[in-house]
Structure formats: C-alpha cells, structure tokens
Length: 161
Image (tube, rainbow, N blue to C red; front, side, top):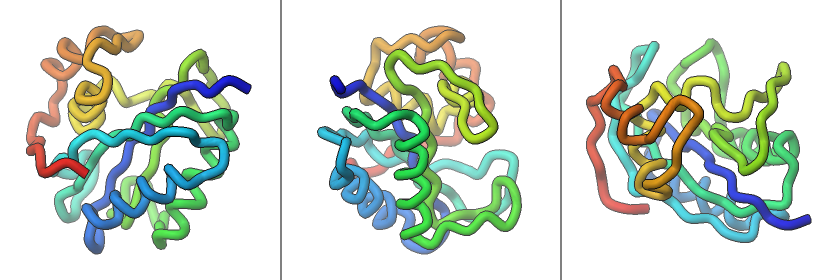
C-alpha cells in the first residue's frame, strides 16, 4: 500500500505535558506502518469546554500505510502507555491523540470520524496545522480564515519539539 499523509492532534495538561508530547511523537514515529513523522511547534493553550491546567498542544504529520481504524488503535495504545484515563468527557489528560485528517479518507463510524468534526473550530488544532501545511484547505475554508473565526484565541507558541 502506498503511504498517505495523516495529521494527528496531540495534547496534554497533566504531568509534564511537553515531555509527554515528545515521547508520544517518538512512539508514533517508531510504529510499523508509519514511515515519517514531522511535528509542529508546541503551543500553550487554555482548556476548552473544561477546567484544569493549561494544555500543551501540537500537530504531527505522518506518512502511513495503516488504515484509519488501525491508526486509531495505535493512537489509543500510545495514549494508554502514557496512562491516559477517561473518567469523563473532556477530563484533564496525560495525553490525547486525535486523528484529524487523512488523505482520501472521509468516514463516520461509532469509533471514528475523519476529518475530525471540530478541528475547524479549534485554534489549538489550526495554528499548529498551519505550521505544517500552510496551504491546506479544509471543507470549511482556508486555515487562515478558520483561525480568524475561532473563539479560542488564547494560544502561545513555545519552543519546537
């Protein structure tokens, strides 16, 4: 199978989020079926739809031969390896990995929706995504236009991963 590009959102707000994101990127790059992994800079962001500490977020672009559901399994295994718990929706977390986009894939199942249904509304996704793919256009519009419309503008760029 020919590798396709996929974009993974990374976030954490418990423990040492920056170190956890770096470890998760290393874990992702080491997976069979993933041939490349490039990360955006890190961003500090405020929690959306929840309380808790500030988040550290990034986006990774990977090249993969994995199917969307197999990739989801890999992402969840990496989350679990970093002690991800899900006591309630939007709970603070040690690690969150979301499949945002995957070339040629549009799907909606009980387990997975691609493209991610709220990515176009989140500056903490769009800003690092723009770092990796500035000319990318989502179904809802250009990254620049979508960023301008985001309510969550409290985002601060940190050092690169």
